[in-house]
Length: 119
Image (cartoon, rainbow, N blue to C red; front, side):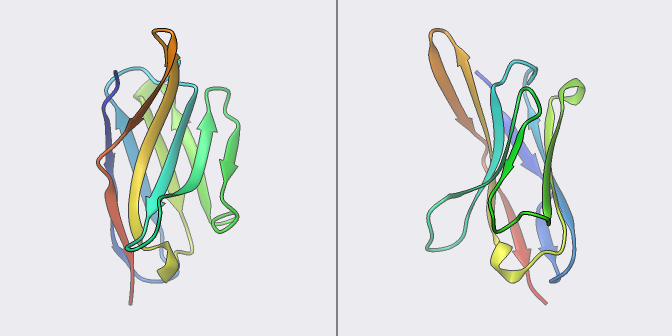
């Protein structure tokens, strides 16, 4: 099992920046993929960015060039640096971890952190 705790959300003006953190309760070295997803009111949860254990990243087209995902295995933490934020980035952001263990894929979510982009 792994518990995920997000932090760093808040209210920011358009064009501003935030850095989200996702702290895991155990080593993330062996976690195959960690990612960030978001869900805006009335919309489905959508992928924002993922990073593999090998450091390969993937971002949604809507955030490419503005958001960067990274992981620090020593701190058991994944980050999402968000720059040039837009009103449409307003959502609850969730951290996700997927890993193979116990003969099956394991999928865990954090509780989410609110990001509001507004003037």
